[in-house]
Length: 207
Picture 1: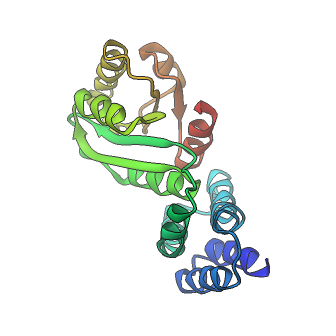
Picture 2 (picture 1 turned 90 degrees about the vertical axis):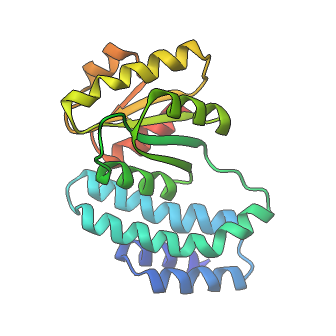
């Protein structure tokens, strides 16, 4: 089980080559793939999320660790699929219509993947129909919406309203620089996250 702890340590250090090496060693030692995921990759990303939230590290370090996590997941995903391991949940995420900003969204995607979620990224400048139809098609647990412009955040309400009309069961969470908890409450979204690390906590809490 030593390799599993070393996976987490290498991920926290952002060393993709070491993560891959230790994941491979753990697989060769016949460690359960779920254990490698939970106690290695997810445990490491949990530490990164906590450090990011505490402002001990910043976006570049998170991106490096997220890439290291992906290098381990490349080896692990086929094994997890074989054993029938399910993702923690499915989230459909995108930037709302009229808004082309995606750095925050991409960071949230990486953090959610690192926390064991299946992430369906529909991209930027997406109308309400894209969010709701994709969520229904994917049987998503959560819809995540991002906006950086005050002129586009109003489009989030359209997604909430359409989800209600279409009987979409996914919970809705929002995030972005101009947003607040009171705005989330006002439009009927079930979750609000001020940063990427909190987004994971909010998504987990919505399950």
